[in-house]
Length: 232
Image (cartoon, rainbow, N blue to C red; front, top):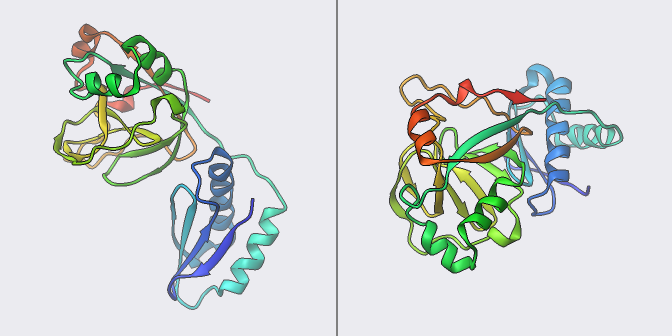
C-alpha cells in the first residue's frame, strides 16, 4: 500500500498510510515495525503506532531519511508473518451497569439482543494503545453500531466500562473522563495503577467480547485480565 515518509525532527521520522482504520494497513505497519527494529538495531530509540501513522525515533545523526526510504523500499518487497493471539473478554450488557445503553439503543434503533449479537460477533484488531495506560484502540466495529461521540464528554466514566464512539469500541481501563457511549461493563481489571502492570495484549492481537449475566459479572468482579487464556 502507498506510503509517504517525512522527517519531523532530527530524531523523528514519520511514515504515513491512507487515513483509514484498516486491517491491511495494521498488518503492514506491524511487519514494518518488526523489520525496522531488526535492521536499525541500537540506532532505534522507539517506534510508536497509530491507525495509519508510524513514528520512528532514532538516535540523532545515525540515520538519514534517504537511508530509511531505501530501507522501506527494500522491506516492502518482502512479507513476514506477525504472530498474534485471540482473547475472549467477558462483558455484561445489563442496563444497570451501562448508563448509556438505553439512549444508544434508541438512537440506533436496535434492540438489546441485536446489539449484543453485533458487538460480540466480531473479533476486534488491537491497533495500538493510547489516551490512557491500557486503553486499547480497536478496529472492526460493524457499521450498524457506529454512533457519533457525545457532544459533551462525561467527567467520570467508571473503569471497566465498554463503550462505543464513532466507528470504534473500547474499554476504559481506569476511571476517567470520556465521550463514548457506555453499553456494557467488563468485570476484569485491565490496568493496575499501583503496580503499573499493563494488559497482556499486544498490537496485532484480536479481542472478542462475549456476553455474561449480571450474576457472573459480580462473581468475576476484580479478576485480573492476566488470568485470561488465549488462542493462537
